[in-house]
Length: 115
Image (cartoon, rainbow, N blue to C red):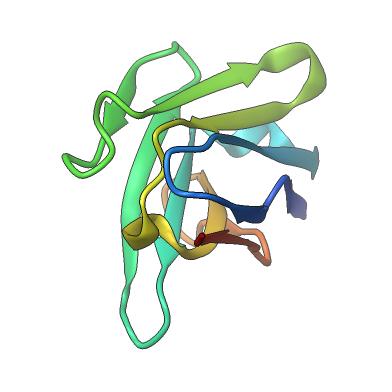
């Protein structure tokens, strides 16, 4: 079993920055990529960013140039650096571990962008 725990959410003003982290523990050998998703109130959960074990990254168009995903293999941690935050970035951010089948999800961390 794998556990994913997100942290780093909070309240930030428009234009500000936050860094989210996701720590993976347990039987993580089956995971080949990690991603961030977000779900705003009343909306579906959407893809934000992804990073493979080889370091290949992919981003949603809405966050390109503002968000950066990275990983620290030694710490089994994936980060999401979020800059130039906008009100529309407000959401619960979830970490996802891809394993080809039933993927793993964290419980999420809330990011609120408001003045």
